[in-house]
Length: 209
Image 1: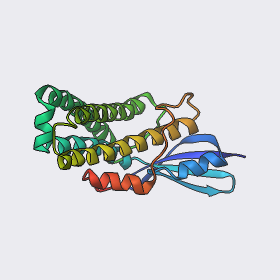
Image 2: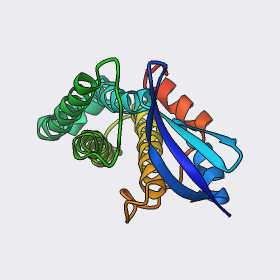
Image 3: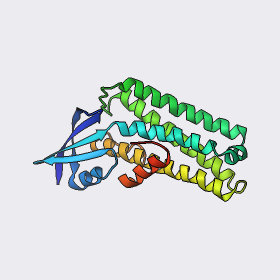
């Protein structure tokens, strides 16, 4: 059974109508499980809301992950200056993407994901966040035999939390893209973490949602 869908963005308590689409009952149920998404149904019309602040939290979590890992002196030393520089470039790219998004959003953000400008800003955050995760993972793997188990565990805790955030971000955008019938899924068939897992990951990375 397919139902009509209304798309609404929420930021700072403001609701913005984004458009309509079609989604099966199974798809609606899956969407409602995503962090950042809520679903309400009246008759045959389901309204799916997207919490825009979630995107900002995901970006900040990536920045905090870099700070956390590099603040572990033994890990940062073992990684070495060249690798730290690479991570720094990814961190700067993420910071720039997040700042651009936040500046454009202001206090009255309206997202239409099919709109080129907004899609570019959101995709830039995901791309930079993914690069941060990849660079941190490579660096931590490379020093896994050179640092104490305690330091390695602390670094991996931050990395695993970031992995959860990246998965949640991908699942959120895939869900929006699928619902709006824009063709191929944006970021692959990533399974969405539960809301509890995402909240725990944000806490680990010092983000208060």
